[in-house]
Image (cartoon, rainbow, N blue to C red; front, side, top):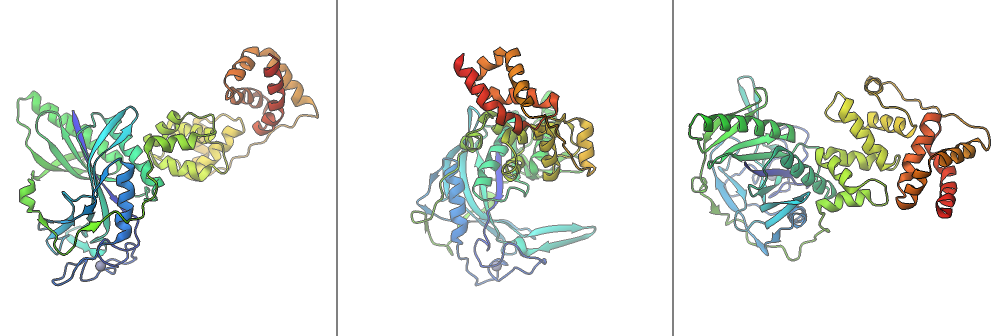
Length: 433
Ligand SMILES: [Zn+2]
């Protein structure tokens, strides 16, 4: 099976790609002007900030950067596009031929191109409404080679991409949108505009089943463009696949060649480094961090928000517990915060306690306090009874967390208090041995 993606990401600029209209308007059809409405005689002006932002993405995906970038008009007729063409890139795309590593595997990137978003079509019963506020907002399209070969790999790709975007300052709370190309046999089927990883996976599962069935029945799979129907959880034929010729690409002569040499460029962000940087100085392995991030990159923002208050290890443990027992797809910050408090307090995080937290109950972790000198005695006794762990600690310092947990939890003690007293004792014993 071969899967290729065309991922659309909104660039974080204040104004649109070719005019100075706001990208964040309040009321429909208020942030519009002759340029983004495509009135005759209007001329586009390229937004430098959008190009710089796209450059950061292309660099982080190991792309070769075009010295001069150019734009083309992709011609098609649809109500969301009053000037009847979309300004996008082809040969002169900003980034060409890169890759994104997911674990051991490299998914090749064909190109990273800048383009404008068309207007938004809103269907309300029999009415079709058009909001032109979105016309001309800057997007980047990341086109992969068909290197992805499973659901897990697709998930990892999107997760890694989103962690890069997060560090580049691109809003990852908005769902990612992608065209998913799937071929089981020779013919490529494209499913357009799928929003969010959950729907992308549903799309993939549906298409695998549909195409497998067709192949089994000896039917020919049509080369076509399909759409994903969220309610029916299935894909439907939209149209026969267009070829590039049908789009009638022509050079956008209203925009001159644009030099990328002098652009400001932030340090690129590489997927494997994101996890490594987070795990640095902790006893959590980068692999564990990257697994959590790839599963749902939303966790990345969450980890960063909660890190000032909690240990990385506890946050990750908390996310894992919630994935197991929680009722929502994503754990709200406040619930996670409380789960982590329980974990750090050495308390069991059960299904019931998560349900309580989701119902809005507050967590109170009460710790026992031992009389002066008692904690040291407890520690001495535990270490004497567990010489294996002391030896293990001399070899592998992160074993200390297990020791802390084993002492704090059954005795209802504050882990930080245990750690404070344990550290000097443990170091002394480990050195003597
Ligand atoms: Zn405008």
